Length: 245
Image 1 (tube, helix red, strand yellow):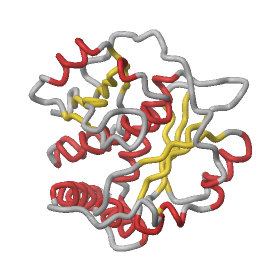
Image 2: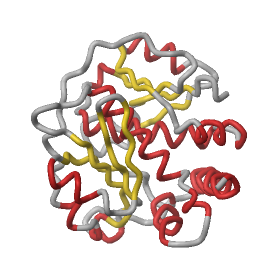
Image 3: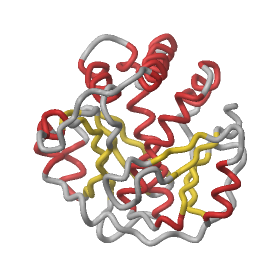
Image 4: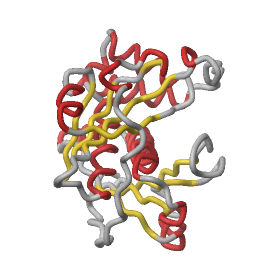
């Protein structure tokens, strides 16, 4: 598992730093790659928003650094196709049987506190499995929680609260932050992070505080392409490695 994790990490780093991206035609879904994320939002016991965003981010990095990404096969091939295009993620609401059914699809589930999310190996948006495609993209909205002080030892994904992103959009951005944070880590630190189960925390914070964190030399920033909700080039999240630096 150790060598496969390192191979998966190297594959991630090399793919994200490679020049150019594959051609896409927004009118041709077969050319557009995306990672789907199912957010577990049951009706009676709705999760905390910050925990749900953290679960989504943890699930995304678990898919990218899964041992199967470090060896030849369908998992690695799916990631390679996605890494070679625009890094899109689509968050969907799941509950009841819908949540239970998608556990059989290739991916990783993460639970943070009382919230769970599952990220899946990417595909062309035209080829999303029916169990996933029938899950609603709308309906993931949750109120922003009262923000506690983050633990400085645990990787932090900070979200610019002033962008007022929906929970689904913020989950996708947090997931992008976790994979970029992993890519920025050394092999030694990413191995330690994986051994601990990819612990992380998400906080939605005022822009002034967000800007201070973004200025940290260890910070990794995510700039959105502006397909939905925010203006192109907006810095949506910054990720900090905590003790894994």
